Image (cartoon, rainbow, N blue to C red):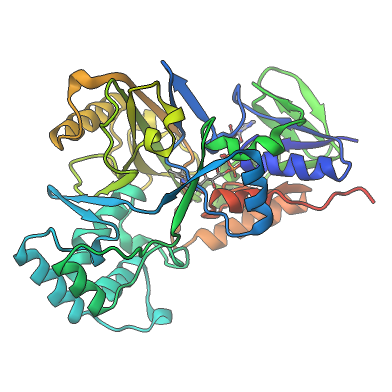
Length: 437
Ligand SMILES: Cc1cc2nc3c(=O)[nH]c(=O)nc-3n(C[C@H](O)[C@H](O)[C@H](O)COP(=O)(O)OP(=O)(O)OC[C@H]3O[C@@H](n4cnc5c(N)ncnc54)[C@H](O)[C@@H]3O)c2cc1C
């Protein structure tokens, strides 16, 4: 009797590891030619790039120990920066206004003092939440813009349960102090970010990955839950006694027969971002000044840029450095937005060439590096990046998950649970009880 796990991202690896440990016979099927999913990486001319930024700060001891036993890690203080209209502000910007011109600081602080004090449970959407936390001027010029760049939608179109401790809400004293002088205090949701010393981010999974039967280049195209068969793009089939999937909900629904219309509609209406990664390698060691930073200016397409070599020097050849920029667009139901050129909310999605051109030109204008210092220039696309918390997410997600449960598919991971999961949460979603007694 075989348990089949679909996808070898962190959730699939975790499911395989834990069930195999409990005696279950497990085979993992993966579409790509390597394991890790979003925790994976790629190497070009000796420059290793993760797929997007990736650090870990797992709070649970069991998970943390597995990651630590897999690989020694660096512990980086969570210090990041913000780029706004030519100014560099320490993160979070609302607590570090000091570098801004006086006029702008006055506008931000005036609006902060005069902001509405609506009780949290009466707040209708993210736009209102931002106005209540920060005041109008800051909300409109910082997070509203970042929301369009990171989530690909307007703040008014998001609900707020996902925010949790992800955003710091300052008091007046913090705002005032930060407007006069640079703050040392960390306001981030974690003090340290861990990153493996060797092998890229996915090395946190070395211990679990060992001894797993992962079959690569196996793209699932159809699932027959009556006959308990999974079919692959190469024409082969595999039978299962138990099926665990970390595939995105909109994708798995397309692989099933006779799915009720309301379930298909709910799956199609699940919104998510898709993202481009622009990866740059340089022939000099000191290009990157910050571990990561956010960009608010909307004419600059990247929302966030980070430095693989500052995460670990193992990510670059000796004497070199690197940056990776992240560019996101709203998507829906896994549509092919690179072909249609239109995002889920109707905004234009530029081509890969335009994204690459804009990113390199703008980062050069920001004086981060010179064209002649670039030795690696690469752009890649990931269809599934973040789950978007629009007002219908909970309803649509529940309809799809209940349906999958009803036909015997156990769904795990960020896109299988359709949740804003960090890696440790995706890992924990793969800890399942064995069906063996
Ligand atoms: C921009 C960005 C930055 C992030 N930064 C961090 C961070 O700093 N720290 C942190 O903790 N988390 C971070 N995360 C979150 C983290 O990446 C995810 O929570 C986690 O990697 C999800 O793992 P998963 O296994 O659920 O999904 P995935 O990694 O997506 O795995 C799914 C797997 O299924 C495979 N697959 C898909 N379709 C098929 C098919 N048809 N047939 C077979 N296989 C298929 C895929 O190839 C993939 O390997 C970030 C995410 C993003 C997008």
